Image 1 (tube, rainbow, N blue to C red):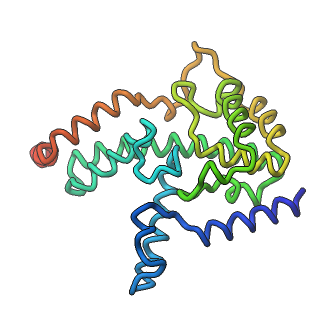
Image 2 (cartoon, rainbow, N blue to C red):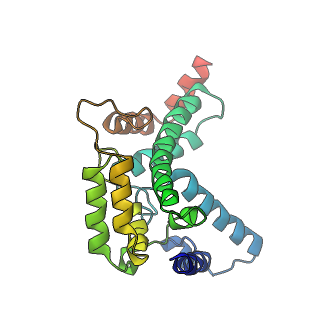
Length: 234
């Protein structure tokens, strides 16, 4: 099993390095621009952005298909238009980090289970999903989706308030290929049993998404007024 995992991770890493994160706009550009350093810096920034935000829909470069991705993306765009250090900038930073923390907590649960299954060295590689991921390239999409729904309904790995992130479909497809998906599900049920409705949500996971989306839309609608208010607050 160890050699199979190492072989898979090597193939996966090579594939990521070769394909990169490509969107429609990049496809129109030459493979290497006049300044190769600029190209590689852009690729590094894309990967850093992916690892920081852990987009729920990694194959959606617009980050608008899911409500949580749209909210996070909109907050990042709104913050970029504000003066760093202003009260508005700081308020958005708090909301952004809360959403990032939620996603990191889910990823950490997956990593804990994988490491308990003996994949200490391979866990990070197995959990890495680039923006170039495509459902068409999956080996067993139906089985992966069924497992994802089981994890969502039979464990507390994900928040029960929203659908599970699609990014984990690609990870489950890898686990199916390695023949450890059922073992992973069994461990998840043991480590993270479903919570009763009366159970209190784990701190950091209780994101009020409708309220957050409404706040972001208000910020976008008000435009520069937010910055003016932030300066007055300072």
